[in-house]
Image 1 (tube, rainbow, N blue to C red):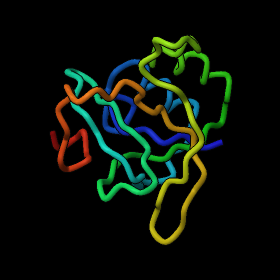
Image 2: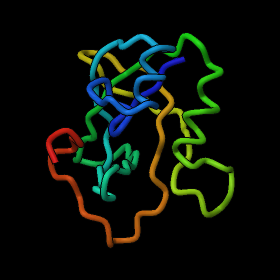
Image 3: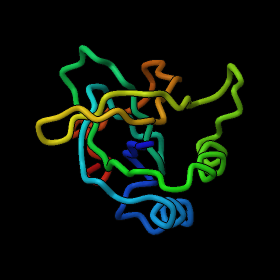
Length: 125
């Protein structure tokens, strides 16, 4: 299973959850999805919008030990409740000349009050 990450779980971050991901996954490379990236303070939220002209840039990891998904879901606040900020969804991620199927934490609470990160890259905010 592959996971696309675009914020605090990216390969260059040093927080404990990013470190856990690197321990239990293999970085396959970088890619993008059509959608918008929002600055939510110390972390971002990204939408997946197949027809969007905006791109969200991130890293693709191949998960070696899927048991870490529970911890990652907890980190992202997923409780399978209508008030959840994120949901983990399957999306196609563009890498070089191919689309790779990945799980992605999709931001659900876009209401027009978030600040768009124009570059689509949380590392360049």
